[in-house]
Amino acid sequence: MTIVRKGNSADINNLQRIDIVNKNLLKEKLNEMLLDRDLHQIRINFNTISKVDCTGIGLLLSFHKIIQEMGGKLILYGIKDRSIQTIFQMIHLDRVITIAD
Image 1 (tube, rainbow, N blue to C red):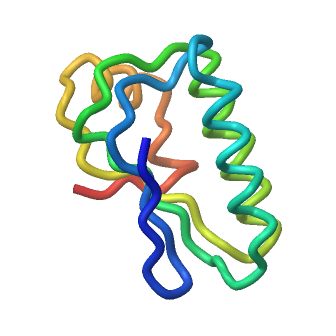
Image 2 (cartoon, one colour):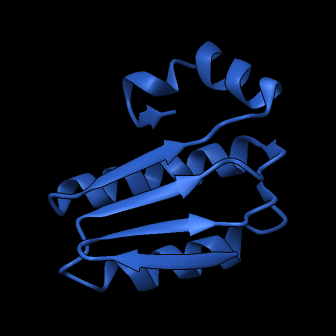
């Protein structure tokens, strides 16, 4: 996982999965990012992600809520994996979290 800071936003890249296996690592990194009050947008690049489970979806929703309450925004982008696209469509995740191309 790499984090690239650009002004008041940050991109999280090179993740392989968002699931119970790496939940704690991702949660720790997101919590560190939330401490930075100048950070208003966190973008997660899904280009390399091949697995998301219910734990991962719960983590995304939780951080979306926290970031939104702080006046910021969580954006998911670059979703290439068809099964992840299908799951996100089925649960209407795009109605809650911004999903970009």
